[in-house]
Length: 315
Image 1 (cartoon, rainbow, N blue to C red):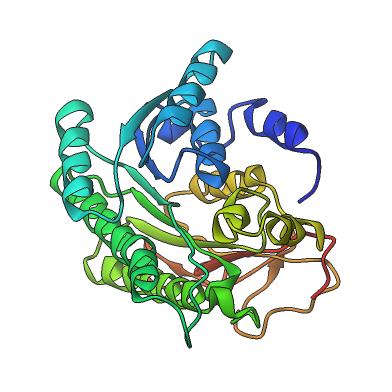
Image 2 (cartoon, helix red, strand yellow; image 1 turned 45 degrees about the vertical axis):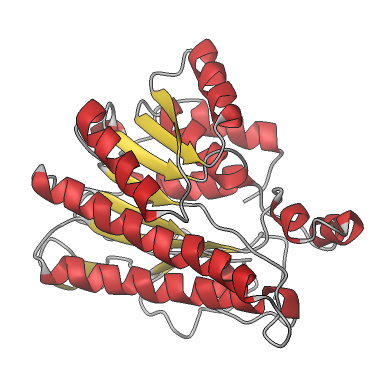
């Protein structure tokens, strides 16, 4: 994916995306919507006519984004909601409010996540707990409550999307993010577990994992809050993805037909076919799949993780 942020944003909002019509006026929950990927996803969904509940610990930025979306005349609505995703009480209260005010959740996008520079040899237990509470438990609680919301309303075409990381598939040599990487490996396992349990429940609700490479957000500045030069260097050393690139992937996933459970790998054209995926190539996307419609493998479907790398980066 390439292009300036404004160009990508314009592409996202230029027209109604084919396949997104069925989501119009339905409700999506986006966690961590105050900036970065979450804000880009929330905006993209509002542009496609969805009602979006955007949550974060502080909602000032979400309120500003909601006003921008309204001023721009986007067909959807962004609803800010304050929620601490490390608190189960806060999460349950949020889902209760969504149930009473908006019926329930049709799409759950678990985007919120945090990293602390706590190494495995000398890191603080409190830092580890903070990461685990949000990246693993908060995500799992939101996924569970979203499914229960869909089930009680007999919604059989909902979608749970976990925004993961390539660090959930490979361990970086940088010790400061080793525990963070462990929580992202957990997200990889949790998403596959969700997919299997949804299949066992004989439901057509889908679960997808999107794993971007480095995305230019405030993430590194929060991780290295005491060393802004190191944080800035994170984004200067390689060609980074932009939040809108991930939002584009979310729209792609949601726009596929209800009978297709999606997975794809976005790679530089020089890369070889990933050894852990099978199937044919279609538009540069490799994968294999299991059709929720017939609940058995289908060679033409694609399923599993979405792994994203900048097209100019060769691994």
